[in-house]
Image: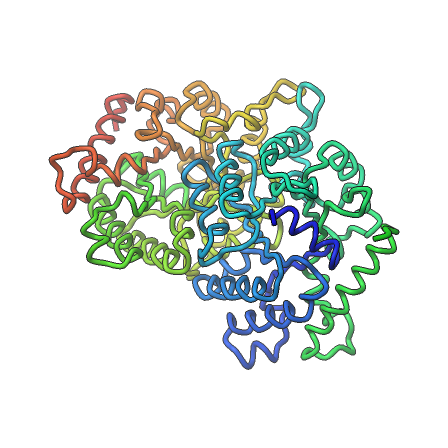
Length: 294
Length: 294
């Protein structure tokens, strides 16, 4: 099954939720740090959360930076985390925002998308600033290995507008031009679901932007950060979805993986159950806001 | 000494040349691949080239993608390559084109710029598409650890114009707006040389672009790819430099590290000497074109 179809199918079967695994040593339970080395503590933290949410969410998204920060040992933890999640039947999006040109993009594609590579994931986030010949090597890898890509389009950070919202001489915004390119890059990898394996990253802060992009680009699956800790509400997110409640996957990282810290009565040891509870809460929150009959 | 001043000083003392270490298993000498594991062959290849050029060039630039492609072992080779080059007195620019927002950019900065990290380099390339709050964490790390940054501005690939050359409603090109931001990001880390530790990446293909940017942004050190294998001539590059022949560092990767393949009479075993010869040839080529008296 094509990556896009698999993702759309899994969203329907489970929920439109992606759990971001951004391990922060200052936030993971202290007993893990006491009993294990730092990287093993993080690995154990990730594995317990993965096991606790695997039946509820289709996707986990490790943020590569947090592992790279810990050097070689951190990257070993990333490798094992990805392997564990895939064994549990989860789709893994490596959030690396990689980008370069030609043969160098090929090398990054090999690192994250090639069958059997250490960091083999199901999809990768990439940055479009270098244009088509920075992205097409990744697109080709998606065709070869049946993987997916999420291209940064309109990000959720406060200063995303500095460049992405610049108005071009024809009245378009830069991000609208980028969106057109993303659709063209993905036009040859469209599945039976109607969606392409080449999707985009669109922040949850901008309901009107989400709505306009949804209408203009019906084949892009949107990966939407910003829910929860970053401040967007379920109501803001409705516009990311198509009429059938598909076509988008909503990421939450800190709001789920550190949920055990939100309630002073929750024991550290129950962090994974707290994450599961947070996913259920988010899922209900989204269902109520969307009022989608499935 | 501030990173910017150190780089400018080393360029004066040695040459304005950066050697890109982009190891490609299909191009490194076959006897190394026969005698060593792949990653040890690459490590040995890198180390011999570093030793052969260390007195002639101020900077080496490992392209992170080529190491990441080889997984954990490749990243160990990257770590040891960086350490070896720095021990030899070379400035190391990690070419990672990293980018993200807020605390995630902090994590990438820690990975490549923090004292004592596995991949600690002297500078890092980054991508500006997310705007100021994607870049300022890296700038802060440069202040804290006395490191440098090279922000993608106008890249050397054929499709770089798709977004970077878009004309804005006020008549500016997108890359000109990005250039203004880069200057503002670097305005508090300017050394006695007059240059900032926050520089930019500008491709060698566009002499008129180089000239205009050089005039408009006198405090940015330009990292200039495109010489040699990518097709730009020394003449094209003159515009990257200031009136005293400073302010830019010209990268060549394949043209130097695989120089042994250019002459059928060169034995594989002499690859490092061939790289040294290629650096000397490039240095003379630049000197002739620039006619700079130093």
